[in-house]
Image (cartoon, rainbow, N blue to C red; front, side, top):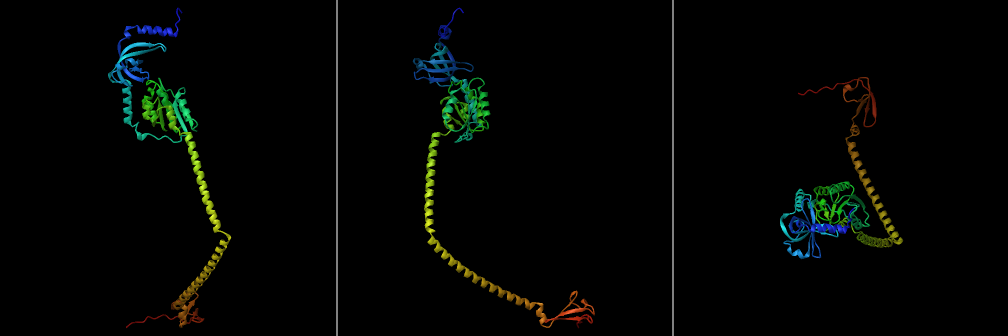
Length: 402
């Protein structure tokens, strides 16, 4: 331990060594702009990156006039400047002195646009597929980091709303974040009415896991509506397009997810007042009706009505008796007529004209051979009858025609 450096001394030594290297001055660097911030001081801060690496950059206000075009995220640029060290943080950065636009767009931007176009063509972003948020969710799932401020913001915004909160922890940046988010979404299947996928602000690299195809497909496949709230209002990810609703911030997502409790209280109070008024109005109408009935059903009026009904009952009873008597006389006349017609064609009338019926033990005698000589038969006359014995049976002779 020949020498012990303080952190400040160590950063100064690194700064001195790098800034005195002529190879790190007056050079051009090529890359893609991300995390661009135009500070209110006039300085511009951004990250210059390629497919594998990135470095912080600053363009001070005095050099801003040497920028040929307006900087924005995803733009490919050529930067002229020097390597410097920001001593308070020990951060290596590029101090730009001139910036001009390079042909083409950045690799990450092209990758983002290609994935967006492909998933859009598959229909994952169709508005017709977007599901409405439930007005009063009973179970709300939250996919985020347990250590992030986004979770605290969401819980604070949900506040006293009486929903069951199911937190499904996930890694929301870095290596393995995509698989962690997908697993957290799968763990909520069949358990929620609504899902919030959220994380706080960060660099484009920090948010890049939400531009993953597997995360977008997992969000699209959820069995309940999904609100995406990733980063700040200006941050847009593939997950935002795949979700049913995009929120600018986690706080905004929570406010979308649940109704305002105070507004619900006001509406409940208003409904209570309307119900009470309706009940009082109904009761007043019933009381008026009751008073009318009481006046209409007084004892004197009831006696009067009873007397009228008794007289009407007597009148109806007399009419019924008269109608029954008329009906009875009519039916008797019809019966007598039918009996007279039956008597005119019956056997008794024929016997009254001098005919007789012969009957043996075997039944009516219809022919000479129905009996035998010596057999007793009964003759039925118009008045009374005779018991006779057969002396002889005379066969009927056929008449011969000439």
